[in-house]
Image (cartoon, rainbow, N blue to C red; front, top):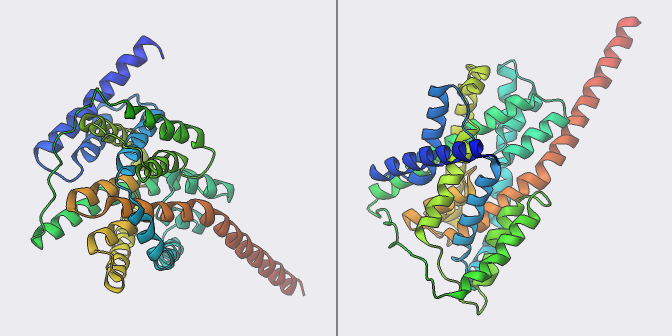
Length: 364
């Protein structure tokens, strides 16, 4: 990295930090994530140029938050998640099915092919859905834009609605914990090398490798006899800023203009999917012992760490949310692309056979 790039990177971090600071002053939900995301996006739109921020810095942010929220895990967490697994799996599968049907229906109204529309509505796996749609000759550029719209819609609507809802119910917002500083006398920080190395080794090797490596290994260490020190507050804020800046850097006004009015249509589908997720969260809370806040955030269709941060801020269970959200992500990334590939190939084969039959009848 040359000296010019270093200054460009510092410039981006300063801009993103300013956004996080401004959002924290006005007490918005997830200020350090949404503030950095918003100001980076707006800055790029006004200046008509893309800020420099390599994707591995966003991954650093994911690793930091993985370490932080892995500390919330206890043995009871694993026991609790096990008891909810089957019900959550069924409802999440139903949410994905509804999303697929919604994408198929929209494709009948607008001049966007069904493959592109369906992959644009899947509630998760932005990169994976983009690649999978390209393999089936869908418009991957549209899928990337519409999936970005979904993610941004989730990040701005869900935390705000959850915060407002539970504040109105008198439950209030859990204030940020007291500032945590470095314990310079603790050698136990060295144990964090294990989840960091695991995250780097699993990155690009398995689905959600960074999350599994950082959060999963930290969770295992957390329930072991090892006493892990807390992650300092400033490091957690830096991780959130990196994630927000990384997402914001990929949002360009020019890309949104390409999709035109269809962007608003898929914004509408995102809101509908969020509504269904809220309903399923409420249903699971009603028929199980899981509290409403944790349940709804576990079904939120995007942004694992952002939903975990929201759970922490409103008094939900971050460990349960992260565990169930990880199940959703793995289901979408591992199963859905292959399943949709088979379904669309069968549908295309039936369509081709039908066309052959019509041509034969016309010839006769």
